[in-house]
Amino acid sequence: MLGSVSFLDTQYEVHVWNGQRLGMRVCIDTETTLTPFHITPSLVTMQAFAGKDVYYVPKDQIKRFFEINHDSTFILHNFSFDFDVLAKFLEGEEVFYKIIDEHRVLDTAILYRLYHLGKIGFIPPRYNLALLTEKFFNVELDKEGQTQWSPYLNSKLENIPQNLLEYGALDVIATYYLCGKLESLIKPLDSEGTLLSHDIQVKGEYALNRIFKNGIGFDLERRDALLKEMNQKLEDEALILDLYGWRRGLKGMKSRYDQICEQYGIDVPFTADGSRSSKKEDLEKFQGNQFVDAYLMYHEIEKATTFIRNI
Image 1 (cartoon, rainbow, N blue to C red):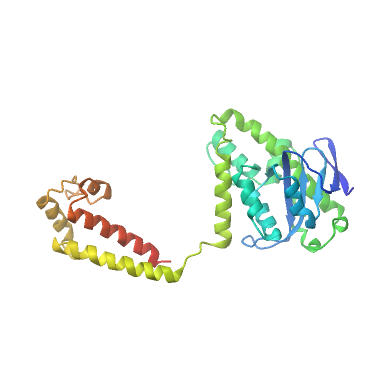
Image 2 (image 1 turned 90 degrees about the horizontal axis):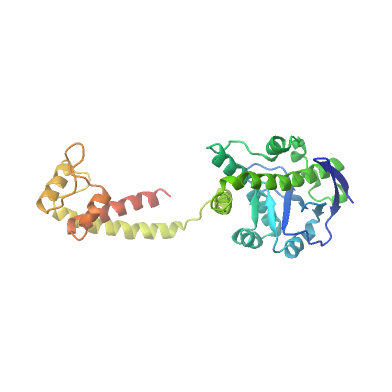
């Protein structure tokens, strides 16, 4: 046994995990090295709690932990951070994609924001675990321990100071009970039974976290080839428009556009200044007209090339 901690007048023992299946709802948390916010830190410990004892999972047993608890729903506070850390340690994200796709994540940070939005009407700017634990349980968590794990990156669990192990144990216990509290608060607001769209928010949060960390890849050679193709198409449409006397950038094209509409029966509505509308939704009613088709396609390609060119 690594020790014991007290939360809400209940004592919980802290153990090293040794292959136990913990149940259908398991809260997990990680402690990590200290790094800049845009860099994924290294895993120091992972702890788990399912309502009885707290277990620190030896790092060489983490893969086995997820295999044994393969159908559990995992409760976390800011799951995208912990999953990112664990994916880096395990050198693969497949297990976490599966957990997310099977809706086996409950994130208390997301639940609180959804509850606050539904109840109060806006998303709160602060929702860290210490704040919510004090708010809902009147229990103060010591957050100074959050920055003290780096020296123990390669340490055995038995060699990590007792105060840090207790800190980590209390975090995972608090998250577990916070989840239950938030679910009960959300229930009266949840007419569709979706926890106020929690599963959708989980997927969005994970996707945005991956984009934030990795960026969006783009094939620059393919961009140049695509841009060449689009510029040729733009020239083709410009030649058609030129037959009607309309050229991008020349003086008087607004009046010429109005004249073309009058001449060819393109009865788009007038705008506030007395000219004819050139909005896409107004022109689409007249598709099949050569000028309208070329005009719409020209502007669509022009917008697309502007976006691609700036990459």
